[in-house]
Length: 216
Image (cartoon, rainbow, N blue to C red; front, side, top):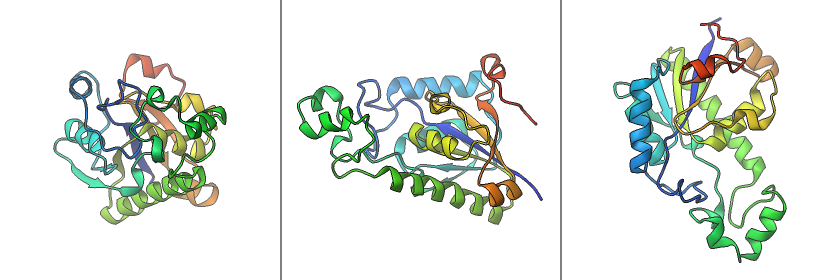
């Protein structure tokens, strides 16, 4: 029974990221700096091979995928899109500082649902649907290594839900253009709903000391 490797990669810096905007479903492209950083990483670091590249439908992810994997098939997966911040989406905390709903939301440590936003439960269900959709498609295509270019919120939620090691959530945060390689073994996935984390992405001396075991 073969295992499946999925390389979860966060998109490059997008327009609005540098201003601290809540970029959920706001479809912002890569900024000039973000594009340059991803182009640099693609040349200076080794990204894992992938037979297929799945992406969030948002442009910052598809642009990142095209730079990192220019010769691969790119397949949009709607469920890989970022969390929907509702009325706060696309705005900065400064712009929202006098908004009563925003003040209440931040006082609750952002655990409540933003006005017209996505519930945490719905977001979790969507992330689970995304990884299941990717697995099914990999099985149909008979490929065993794929990349998924998505968002920090999606990666963090997937890692928190399924990592066999159950690390603290803060250890799953990844910077733009970086991420994790996970291995899904059908027996473990079907029986326990967990996967193994093999390494950080991209490969570098810094990431070799992170503490993950690499079975390649």
